[in-house]
Length: 323
Image 1 (cartoon, rainbow, N blue to C red):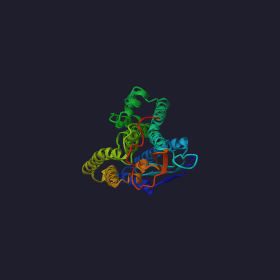
Image 2 (spheres, rainbow, N blue to C red):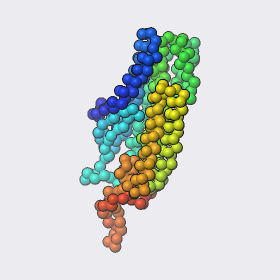
Image 3 (cartoon, rainbow, N blue to C red):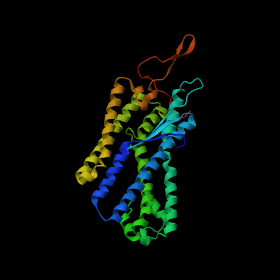
C-alpha cells in the first residue's frame, strides 16, 4: 500500500479465529450467527484500517522529512511502522537537535491521524441518518450530531440494545459499525497519548519531548519514563486480572491488556539496566543518547571528533526549544 509493504502477524489471525469460535460456542440460530460473524468481521476490518492509517501517519511524516518506510507490521497490540531517519548530504545522521525534532514530528503524526479519521466516520454517520431516516424513536438520538458527540465520550451512554431493538438486526449493523469506529479512534488516541508506556506512542512522546523541549538528559528522561511506565503496567495487569475473575474464559481477550502491562514492566526493567550501564543508546527510544560526534574546544578553537565511546553522553542533547 502506497509503496510500503504491509505485514500481518499470525497472532492477529489467531485471535480473530478465537473471536469467531466464541460466537459459534454461544450458539443461536443461523441468522443470529451470521449477523454476529458479520459484526465481528466488520469490526476487525475497521480495526486494521484504523491502525494502518495511524501507522501511515508515522511513515508519511518520516518520508516528508527525508526518510523511507521499510514496512508496517500489524500485530495483536496494534501496529509498528519501521522507517529510516533522514541523513545529511554526506550520508551521516544530522545533529541531535534535528534528530529529536524529526522524531517528535514522526511520533506525533500517528495519533494526529485520528483527528482526520474521527470526522470522516462522523460524516458517514450523518449519511446513515439521512439514508435510513434514523430518528430519536429508533436510535434514542435527535440528530446525527448528538449521536456523534456521545460516541466521542469514552464514558458515553450509547445504548446499543435500544437501537438494535428498534432498527432491526441488519439496519443496526452499519450504525453499530460506525459508532464502534468512532469510539475506537478516540480510545486509540487517548491510549497512545496519555499512557506513557512502551510500546505506546506516549512513551516516545514523553522522552523525546523532555529531551527536545526541556533539554533533559537521556538518563533523566529514562528515569521519568520508568516512573510512569511501571504504574501504567500495574494498572493494566490489575484490570486484566479483574476481567478474568469476573468473566472467566470470556475475559481472555481482555487478558491481552494484562500482557501489554507485563511487556511494559519488562521493558521498564530493561531500560533501568541500560541506564545503569550507560547503554541507553542501544534502545530504540534513546538512540540519540550517544551522539555520532563530539564537539570539543582546544587552544586552536572548536574541534569536531568522531565519538568512539561505548557509553551514553552525559550532557543534554539540546538547550531546549524548537529551533
